[in-house]
Amino acid sequence: MTGDGLLVLPVKPAEQESSGYVNHIDRTPDNLTRLATLYILLVFLSGLAAVAYFGPGISAVSRSDLAGLIVLGILATLFERFGVHVYGNTTVSVGMVTIFAIALLYGPAGAAVVSPLVAFAAELFGPSQWYRRVFDMGTYTLASVAAALIFRALLGADPPVDGWLVPAALVAALANYGVNAYLVALAVSLTTDQGWWSVWKEKFQWLFPHYLVFGLLGLALAVAYRVLGVAGVLAFVVPPLMMRLAIRQYIVKTAQHVEELKKTNLELETVNREILQMSEELRETYDGTLVALVSALDARDRETKGHSTRVTAYMMDMARQIGVEEGSQEGVDMQRGALLHDVGKIGVRDFVLHKPGRLNEEEWEEMKRHPVIGFEMLKDIAFLSGAAAVVKSHHEHFNGRGYPEGLSGQQIPLGARIFTVVDAFDAMTSDRPYRKAMPLEAAREEIIANSGTQFDPAVVEAFLVTYEDWLREAQQEERQEEEEFSRKAAA
Image (cartoon, rainbow, N blue to C red; front, side, top):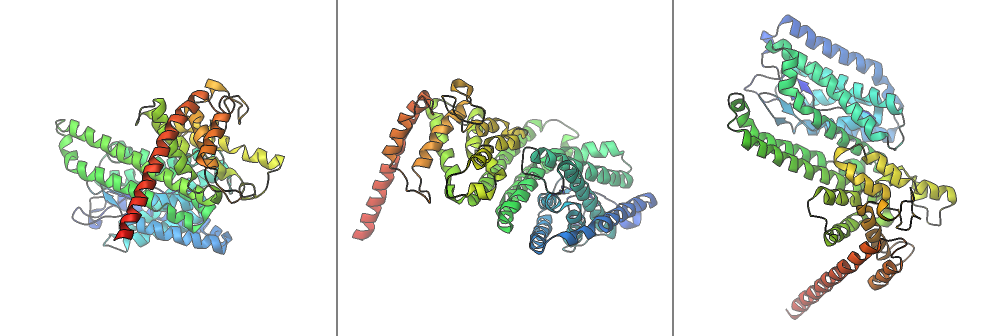
């Protein structure tokens, strides 16, 4: 597995369209200095050398995996056509997500083969100077191969799905950013007579967080492909496009003010509001990505399809009843923790996860590891660190007889204490292949019976109040359906 990102490349004159990751060279080919021309050719030849060295390794890819590589390559090329124009001639695209996934899945061989083809194919859809095309091919290749090598150096050719996966992917994304930003900033410096450092600070410094976020999306796409194949890839097409939409909305609203902000600070308040709006849009994009990931996981664990979505809704109703402020960070952490509570099952073998009968001791110990696996996956991601605590403790019991740490009472995070109740309630009231759903009232009595042992008594009290609300809502919906049916029958 490796990655590619928002690349920065030479660009066409200002009156022409530009594509690629990030582009910015304002001179025409006739005006390129000899030094700039030599540099562009050097980058291109370095990319070719990487293809020649690593490319033959693609022959080891199986026929089924090769089909996945082709699908990912086509998506990467299509994503390149969704570039967003930012300041001047600079353009940002979401192609990194797919190319990064290719690098993570297929290593330097896959990155070396696909990256230049994506860069070349993207340029076929519009006019482009030779120097931009060859520079794009070189930088795409070098940045993605560098990310692939870093990732493989950290985790090996067949990395396990554990707590090191996310940190390794972030380091690979950082390598992608470093190689790409350095190469392109130097290209801009040579063609505009600006210092490399000032070019980087002005045009490319702000891209760093996007590389990290796109890197995480690329990792999620790679994991989805490993778990679900091509179907998993298609499930993740929408989140990157939503990310692109969020970036575009922000850029469209701020681009007209950027040059003016160099002369005056009068528009600062407006720009700050727009930045906050972008943050909210990105937050929604994060949530959309999480939902897509959970959908992929639910598709793997067929017995619990829809379980994560239902318990999240139950969780938020209970949290409001207990007094957690809606929209607060605590509430957001609970919501995301409930949604991702079983993400650690990605590290549990299919044989164990889908075993129809009782697990033996060894298999049960493997299953009991999933809260810790999920915690390790999430704890170092800033916007999921709070949710990680819920994920880790969602199988702890109030009396200390749960797992993985045997916490008891107030040692268990409030979100995990709430989740334990709603998780049990949904499990009892949902059909499973080996049993029918329990009646709601019977499930309620079972919750009461385990108050003080498995469940926090205070949380159970809140559950009983919320349960009545759920029951009234269900009855009201049932009456409305009956009335609608009667109206249609009478008509």
